[in-house]
Length: 114
Ligand SMILES: [Zn+2]
Image 1 (cartoon, rainbow, N blue to C red):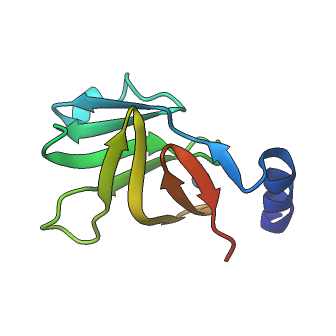
Image 2: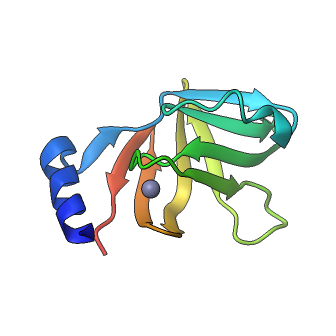
C-alpha cells in the first residue's frame, strides 16, 4: 500500500511539489487550531524567536507536523523564511501511522525515498 501510494505521489507530483507558501506567527499554541490551512505553516513565537512550526503534512492525509524550533530542546529544526516560503533543516521524518520523510526548501517539498 505504501509503495503504491509513493508511486502515485511521484506520478502525480514528481519529486518536488509546492507545499507551503505562507507563514503566520501566533503567540500561543492554542491559537493554532483555527489558523491552520494546508499551505500554511503556523509558527508559535516571533520571527526572531520561533518556538514551534506547525503545519499539515504535505502528504495531504490530514495529519499535523509539529517541529520544535527551540535550540535548547532536542530534537530541533532550524527555520528560515524567505519571502513567505519556509525552509526547515534537517529533513522532516515523521513516523506515526504513516512515515512521511521530506525536505522543505523554500516552501517546496522534496520527498525522501527510504
Ligand atoms: Zn504525512
